Length: 572
Image (tube, rainbow, N blue to C red; front, side, top):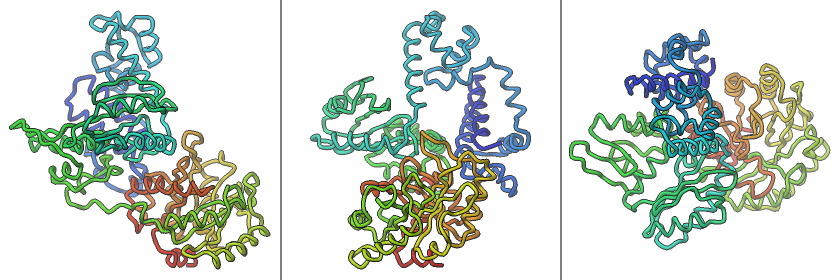
């Protein structure tokens, strides 16, 4: 049983135990275990094969470890199956709707026979929910609004689509008089790859003026709610955005609270309850004196708790609090650490700009080097390079290197790994290049065994340096291919090959938990934008977000190194 399925069982158990009125600490234990296991970079099955102690996982104690082993070994959990028999079918689905507590969920299920969200929506429409004793029209209407909001959240939007819209909004509001702070929070600030909604936080001398400007923006399709310090709107694509304004001296507390994640905040609150402190969006309250401390910055908020500042990308309750107690949070990679881009395309294949234009744009960013990696001929749809055209491009790059100052162009190619595992250019030619990237672009419906074999064959090829976007996914468009990533990681480590964090916002492949696992196994990682124009060189920031969520430091990413060291690795 995979981690996602194990996590679902524990989350359902938490919901059902809450419905029974069990000890809330027991319920939270299952909630935390579910969240942690879902986001583990390593499958539990592999941990058990390697005799690793499951209790080393944050939030997994002896009891949950035993249940996890039972799930992996049998595919079922006896206590969960018994627990389900105590409740009507579909009740856990109702509990996922905000505003529906255990008692209401039970009434809806037993008295109206509701088993799904669709059933509930129909029951509200025909008046049956409002007709229940002590519910009424207002409660029914509130539930309907929550269902609609939940459906919007289920339609998650890739961060690459949401972030530009959010930045337009923030830029439009920052010029207003008296605005001091304005920033995204929530999953966007934690750089989750997809978003259900947007939380924006700010402070201003006149907050109501900022709220008025916010709801009047051209990007706003609908105003859901508006008050003097808070507003909710619908943006293009159905994305909901909430803006909250507070006093300047409370901004740090607000930002920390709404950045989350939920499990990070729960773990913090539980830790501080033992010390007599209550945490909220308003600050920290001493429960003995009822005195509230406000915090203008997050750094001061964490410092008050005796913790090192925790970067937003790490706030997932994955052991970051324990490390912060020891002052051991690592210095994560930053965009300024990147010295060059190793994966770009030009108008020699399917790119839009010339090699020289790409080089000058990279130099303007501050890069020392740029690898030109157009597609090989196997990608006929991409006007790929055959042997003759690639040799012509090598000559062109050599000519430009003699003309350009301040940046070094690397000769390269993105070769296609064919369905049979072969490479579509002669190895003698590949040996003449500075960098060779290999990737799958076809036959993506093959079995896990076939896909993995193709990738492993490319890793073993002495002329291939990098495996690009290994799972071939496109966020919101194409699911990842079936592939044994653990086998890929181990082969890359064995043969000293690099795996790419593809920063194209529609890909983000490797994803965060894969980057974490690869780093853990000592695999060399490298970052490329896969840019097809000069503007897309700016996508590097999306790759940085993935790397930071994978706990990567500058030394874990090859292209934080100067050109001499990159070339030394490629020529090893």
